[in-house]
Length: 439
Image (cartoon, rainbow, N blue to C red; front, top):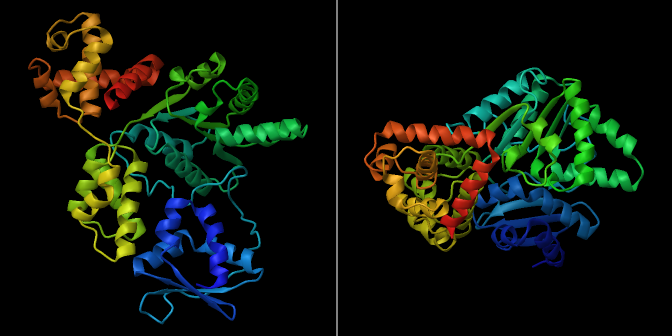
């Protein structure tokens, strides 16, 4: 292997991470001569994936090591013809764009078109569209909350993209709450708080991801409180995301909590099985991966409800197939994912046992037809978890809870869903029992 490539490898490992390095960089054979770098890869899919995701990083690293630009050619094993146009490794000059966020960067492919909509995220999706069409007019603030990897970041990026399309001159800040805090700390250290305030209080839309990160950080909350008031008082749009409802964020000042709860709160639940299938097909199509119905069904049933888990499983299987030049089959997916898949043996009976122990009841109490508050609420919790965690059908749940009519279960699920959006204690309760079920 050429010395240039050997020198670049440690830098690439550091930049792309160990997993990506072993999957996408190590299999490459490299030759360099007379200002041309030739990367030989095992398959056409491998080449396309490498070009889409890692070629710019390889370009920059080779230039850094060599101190001069190179032409890079990618070829598939056994082919002498280049499979992609040679690209000169030159430093790109910054391009001034007529539109775009003033603060923060957006993920290019996180748009409304690539967001899979279903019953678990429909309200949040509709709210994002309404905000994009009329920022600061109808829903303000908007507070989106849900577990990790359920699409909150995708949705706010899609909202921002669409708002910029509709309103090219809009002044926008779209960033994580952690980034907001880091800018604040830097401004404090450099005695530039006036510039910080001018920067964030003059935007037309402020979109902060993972607002729960501000919990317990008094100075940051203080500054954000005044920023929030300045923007809201001027009818500027505010959109926030969190992994929990406002009432469930510990360490959050009450005055901020009350302002968050003064707007639209939309919950994003784990996707249904049908949605997981749709998400897999969408991501496979976008990545150029051929996915049979049988493989899609296996991945959707075997992985978790997180969109990130689904995407990660698809990426691992596709990468393995690309490296070894084999088709993607159920057997291959089982081989690749088997050691990584969590044990999923949550049954209605296990949920009934966990809920009854948590509330100091018996399983017989949950199955009984007693209607007192001390029984009905735990029963609704158990029915809700049976639907969302065990993914049991309404009739099956009804049968397991004393042979009730399935409409009773539908009502229980609706009641808990509504209470989660307004009562942080319910969110914390569900999280606690979920943790017990995972253990």
